[in-house]
Amino acid sequence: MFRLSQIALILILTAANSLFAVQAPDQPESLFDQGNSAYQEGDFPAAEQYYRRILDSGFENGPLYFNLGNACFKQKKLGAAIYYWEKAKLLLPSDRELNENLELANLLIVDQIEIPEDPFPIRVLKGVRDLLTIKQESRVVIILFLLANVLFFLYIVLKNSRLAFRALIGFFIAGWLTVLLAGSLAWKIHDRDFRRKGIVLEQRIDVLSGPGEENITVFTIHEGIKVSIHTTTDGWHQISLPNGWNGWLPQNSVGIL
Image 1 (cartoon, helix red, strand yellow):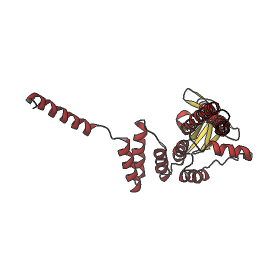
Image 2 (spheres, rainbow, N blue to C red; image 1 turned 90 degrees about the vertical axis):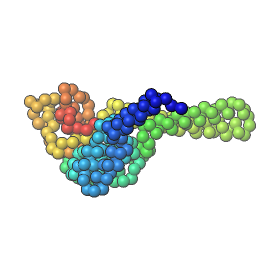
Image 3 (cartoon, one colour; image 1 turned 135 degrees about the vertical axis):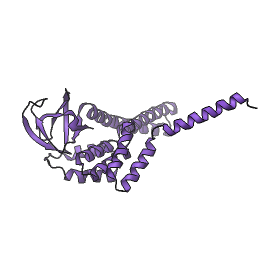
Image 4 (cartoon, helix red, strand yellow; image 1 turned 90 degrees about the horizontal axis):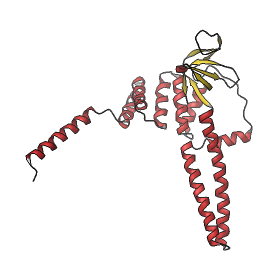
């Protein structure tokens, strides 16, 4: 039997939990559903705000960036749409609808810069590299490495039997795949950490000769174009275009990928 004091304590704790539940901030799942509902109703600004609140809470994933890009595109915010779709592509590299959206959006960019096409072998390597995210590829490399070690151990234990020969063949195949994917993974990590990319968010903006409003304009670019970011100082990014042109932009005018 509960004492009266214990019953009172339980009632107080229950009331406190109920109050906390009412006052607790919305969960990402709830905000995501609300954003989707607003999008389906054609209220794209509201949908964008719901999705942004999820990002502000520290949560991110591919579908969130994809839907946020859709909401921005519907509002004719081309730069923001491309930025969020590019963020989604880092997490969903093989998503067909996402890649189709990006292809369409890139046709709408004002600054169409001719980029020399990579040789066929490089295009193939890049295509294979982009099939998996960094996290996914890291897991595959670890699994292949462990598999190679297990197969080599079996080769030693089984000695000269037919199974030992098969284990040796499997070891070489797993080892070769481990080295190949580890190289691809290193390539991705190097690109992420040392070759920063960004998307111009401003509809139209002047690129200056130095980090400051007092510098002269060297050329003008428009929203959606992808730039390489080399240096960041005092609120300014030093950027370059695929054709070699370079200059400085305000930090808040570029979304970092």
